[in-house]
Structures are given as C-alpha cells and as structure tokens.
Image (cartoon, rainbow, N blue to C red; front, side, top):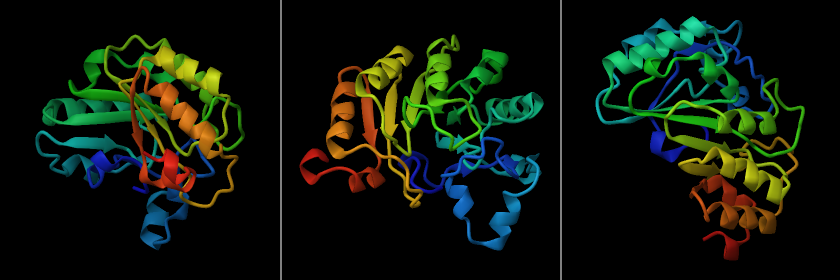
Length: 227
C-alpha cells in the first residue's frame, strides 16, 4: 500500500476495485506492475465480493478501500461496506478516508462502525489539476463543517507547495486528532515545498494536534529538521 500509514500496514481490505473515479495522477495504484493487479484496478468501479469473506479479526486497525475511495462510489455500496464492518467486526478500528468529504453528509452516523476515524487527503491549500476530486481547500472546508461525531485525521500526502498561514488555519478549523505528512514516492515531479517550509508547518501544527511524519518525508527534510 505504498507508504501510506504504518499502523495499517498489512491491514487493508479493498471492497472496491476498478478505476477510482478520483483519477489522481500521482496515485501509487498507477504503478502496479503485475498484470493481475493492473486488471483488478482497471475498468469500471465494482464490488469485490471476495473481500466480504475475509476474516478481519478483533482489536485491529483497518484501512478499507485503500486502493480506491470508499466515498466515491454508489451510496448503497458505501453503506453496504460500512454496515458489514459495523455488524461483523465492531471491535476493530477503521480509517474511513476520502477526497470527497462532502459525501459524508449523506451517510447516517449509525451506518459507521463504532470505532471509526474519518479522514481526508489535503496535499496543499492551493488548487491543482492532478485529480478529478474537489480541490484541497474545498475538502478542508467541507470537513471542518462535518457534524459526524467521530475523530478526524488529515493526510498531507503527497505534500505540495502551500501558503503556510492559510494552510495551518484551514487545518486548525477541522480539529483533527492527528495530521500525517508524507512526500511523493513515485517521481511525479510535483511542486514540492522546501524543508524550511515543511518544518514551519510541522511546528505550527504541533501547537494544536499530533503530527505523524512518514518515512518518505525525509527526502524533503534537512537532517537537522527531521526530528
């Protein structure tokens, strides 16, 4: 699952296969070299019935639909997945992450598993044309106004250049439990910030939330600022 979240490493279950409608140009799924995986994540988005037969155990952390977007599909599919996790494996913790947090508004809180963390990806506070998803600023604003009473997280990965004061304020309004920061691992030639700016962001975020730094961020950080 690329360099996403170490705590979910090995604990991903992809109920959705086919092309992700977000179409992010930097997505690690684009780099799958095995023919079977390329076929699995090509074509129309669809349900993988085999995923519903997996035993997800107890007291584990899972990242459902890590190769797609659980909120960028048919509502009945989203609800079916959430209900399956809630009814069959309620002891687990689930990261429900999307680039379309506006869709959270259309799901009743009772559909979610009890131990849910809601997440979004917001790579920057600037507009860009690398995805069909809403612009990052729109995601952050939608997420800030979300009334679902679950802990929230924000993934800044792959981090792109940003306006420090504005980005920090948009994140602060979300009141995230934690923010995870990572870099592009797949040579997509993104517009990336320098180390001083990244360290400024980290220090500002630490004043009001936990910051989790991905290993791949070390490429952009100077050694003296990596602690």
